[in-house]
Length: 404
Ligand code: GN1
Ligand code: MG
Image 1: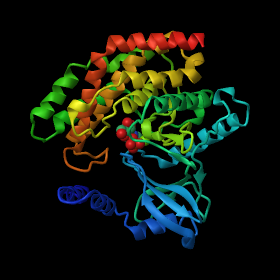
Image 2: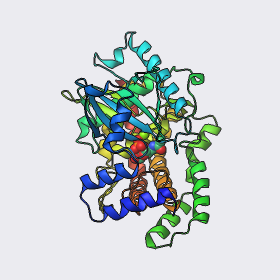
Image 3: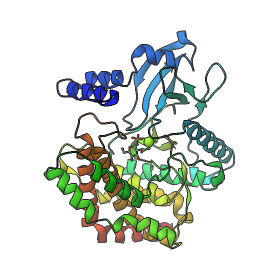
């Protein structure tokens, strides 16, 4: 067993008998982020005696994230997962490019904002050397970014009003980056969201995997086999020239939209590591799949997983209120495919990672990524079952947006 697998199995054996706090402590320890270590890393960005607290933040599956309070101000400390983002310098370069571009746009009048505030996480450099990244002697690249004040994010949607805000937030983000020149964006994660490539990766993982098959894995294998042709739906549309590449967020899932603590209005998107040219459909699909499944990505009961069309309507209303002007009829025609595809793709990615030993997505127990895959496949089925109604809904909302 290699060192990583040993550390993992230590975490897993703990998971079976511990409560959540102890699991989190064990996970942190297994990654080597004990409090002394975190304190030392945070001190690269903040004067040590001003640091008041460091606490885990959010539920990201890739980077490790902490809220650091220093000198009365909250900031976000993150260890960039270099297994995923091989060139963290490029991630930071993009963050600066996006930040500069959006700040410049926000200095011009922007009626679509309707007077609300809009913020972006800003890079806070190291105390010595003013660098955007801190390379820790124990390994790992760390960064500090600003925390959007007086705002919160949610893991599970609370209602249609909020859904509308989540859609508005994505539309506003797309509008703000729509004229960001693509040469200013490095590709931080090659192949990200190219579903046929994930399919290829899955085939290899399946051949290599030494896992014992069971009813659940057989279900996943058959599920994927039945949708192999569908996996190319967006990429084929792009190849035919029906859909075009534009700057996208890449990961606009529900909890990456910040909502004002008092008004509930969307005030910014965070987690900008995957901003790059892509199809806006990846974003629309990801927003829909993560918001319209009220049971969540870890739903304990698969039967409870359902794609809520009313929430989808509210999200698209919010999105179209900003984005309608820059959406072509072809863009509209692929929205339902996008929701179905991105749910399927995420299931495929979770399942491939399970087959490969969960090296990409953090897992809290050995079959975590298998269960996550089953949840996404269930969601895909729910979208498929409602396909005709959803297509009619999208067309109706488009007509309303055109008339508005
Ligand atoms: C990962 O790390 P997090 O939670 O922000 C993943 C997304 C998935 C998401 C599913 C770079 O995002 O693509 O949709 O998990 N990010 C990357 O929860 O792979
Ligand atoms: Mg992310």
